[in-house]
Length: 87
Length: 450
Image (cartoon, rainbow over all chains, first blue to last red; front, side, top):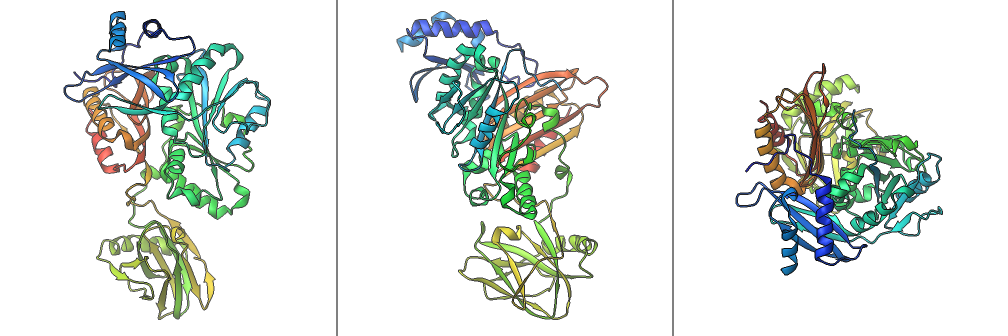
């Protein structure tokens, strides 16, 4: 699948972003002052998902926990987040 | 130009510069000037700000890498946390300044603002502003990655402490900085005194301004960086150099009709041909003659002294591969230091392996979006670590709106901008980074034209 750098892309819904952050906080039982960063990384290499969602939880300074979900943010569901805690 | 500042986004200025450059002086000035903005400050060199401000937050540089095997980017964990907490007090301020340490790599700081979707929605990286100590930057510009990157990443550069150097030195420094980053706005300052509208809300990513075509892009490239015409009497003179960034330097000494710009201009094309010949190596202690031959000075000895043998009094033009100041080159006639009567700098066609440069491309025509996607995807994947910044305005075939984009290393952010309307459609983009191959980039981009 080809990336669409230069095509008009549908902006990701900010509500989905807030929702996923909230699922992360719930699933990992994070306190309010723990920052969570969510981003989508794109890749053109064969065999890689074209877009994956990367989540970094900044619990300990300097050592964020990082998780990857092999789908765009818009398709991330609560079960995807819950399954990260099992790993 | 639509600065693409969305309502309620907080503008952020990232302030970089080596220790002693005047960065904190500038910050203190910004905090005390009457510009009506409430500014929150995140500073790495905590305690330096002399202004009472309860929105000053200390940060400790905390870098981490996000890597999925293909895309790799480093971000600042401390900034993510601090900005996240700061945004909970959003009603207390309307601008954020991030001051980095003198030795900070600006890459992770800038990438932080591109990484988190929520952060992108709430904050707008207005500019990276770099303060340069006009007197002492030469000590770092050739051998410090941080100094080069701070200049390369900048949207705005203050050449500060101009009272400590001569006009000529400033011109030389400005030319060097322009060769590294031709898109930045450059201001000469003393005590970091600059109008606030040059620093705050400048819309560094205001691409119309950033992409104003630098005439240097259009200049032809030469195999030499500098030429100067000297009036030399018959006899043996002395050329002295100091160790510099390269172990050798090619040069040619040729007679010219008179010591004028016009006479120098007439010599340029013939000397371009001389520079395409094989060079004759000359070691320290050897004799240089106005033979019209290409000579390569070996600059590895302790004493870099060469004789200059002139048989007939007259005007002579010296063309050098690198700027002579890089080797503190001096010419002595009868023991007295002589300066060139006229001199000129040239845009060089050579680049040192790790040199930071800008490559600008401006071309009319529409672009094929599919080919463009393939090209930029491959470019970011393979050259992303070397591309510090890129910005552009593009004309995509079939799209009524201009497309504006910017990137930091492998991260890319692009969006449609205002309609082209009656304006003639064109493409203008710039890359700033290391090991950039101008020919390859231009060829690659032009292959995307529809």
